[in-house]
Image (cartoon, rainbow, N blue to C red; front, side, top):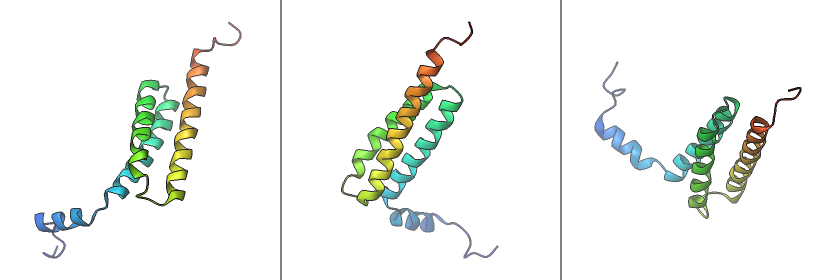
Length: 99
């Protein structure tokens, strides 16, 4: 392994300076959306709700900072996962059929 491949504190600092926070927020919102669905499938509703609420808190920070179409897509993701959450909670609260 050559010294050019080595990660130095200086290289790391340089990469961090290049990072756009908007990209990190979008990535985090995407991950939270995926985790919300995963937690819903596992019936971990409190964890799903936390992921949904965190996504809802992040999206307004991107207003005017990312392409409007991208923000619209993330808002649609949020709306979809909220509907999935409501359906999953309602199904879990419904009495079992045939009982």
